[in-house]
Length: 317
Ligand code: AVI
Image (cartoon, rainbow, N blue to C red; front, side):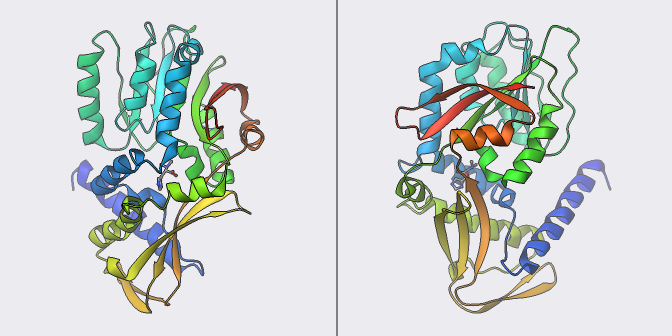
């Protein structure tokens, strides 16, 4: 078996274990990272353009409005490391204002996507040194070492993706990621804020049903990769704000009693029973400061006029 096939086999094996483990629990659940096969990533792109989904456009507007000031937090000679760079669209807003960074390091799990995006970035920014890293940024990965002792790393983590971790997982992640940084380094991060429940719930229940299709795509992905037989028509999308936990929860609710086979195990799903597919935590500024404080101090917060979203500069402690 060559190394690519081995990698594919290993990731299928860990998907199998994680999916089965989630389905064996009393509250069935599936890891939200499995939304994102090629179709899921396209559906997510569509979500970011929906009028109901305020986070993407609000973050972009904050960055555009405050860009010269945000860029000041990235000194010349620093290395900009983007976690889960995807299309690098928001990064362009930053790159347009940075003239002399040492390098841009996009970290992205999809090799194909990374190669494509780096190709166009190289054309548009011919003087920029780009050092792509193909990796799952939630696991330890190697960043290209920097030779100059006066250079430091600045992480870029937009989109409020931190909200998809439970707070204790978010803290483990922050601890791991802070180890990449040398003194003087920091992180520019997008964080979705708590607000009127209706605004948040509408954002995850759009009229066109794109979020519902995105949610159901996890079953389609599992059917394909693990030889499962989920019938997508038998599940209904449900998303609501869980006040006590401070998070939007997405579920797939079974419309009838049914059996499903996944990788040679069979599960009975009752009528009305749900499979929990995603959490999206929303924070107050105080809650977020507490979350990060063992490793980072919040140096600056930019928000929109309604305080719906924030972009923050965190300094490594
Ligand atoms: C990627 N992540 C920040 C999105 C969110 O809002 O939690 C994923 C998403 N789920 C439904 N809509 C968007």
